Figure 1 (spheres, helix red, strand yellow):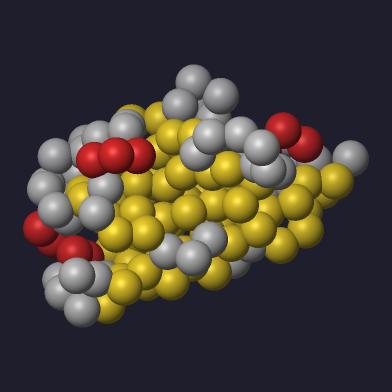
Figure 2 (figure 1 turned 135 degrees about the vertical axis):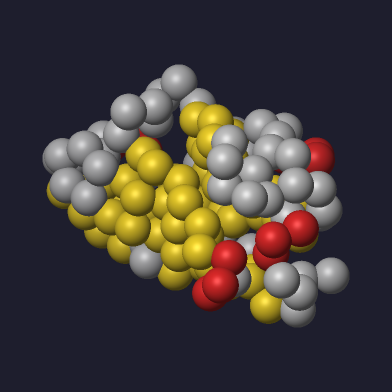
Length: 124
């Protein structure tokens, strides 16, 4: 089991940028695909982005494609989500997740470990 801690959330104006970080401890993340998901109250957790164990494959939700970028630094056991041109509808709690497979997945149920989440609020 690994532990995940997200950081970097906060208040940002629409059109601005924010970078989320997820530090993983307990095991090297090279054997894990990693993902970012988000959730707003009363709604299901929604896929945002995922990256394979080696970093060679990435996938994005249509709603963030072209604006968000997922990346990983396996030497630092850290995954990032660069959020550019943010919109009010990006407001949510963002969760980092680890999957015990190097294959990326867009499905929350494929992930084994989750962080506690970090709040992102976009103001107009």
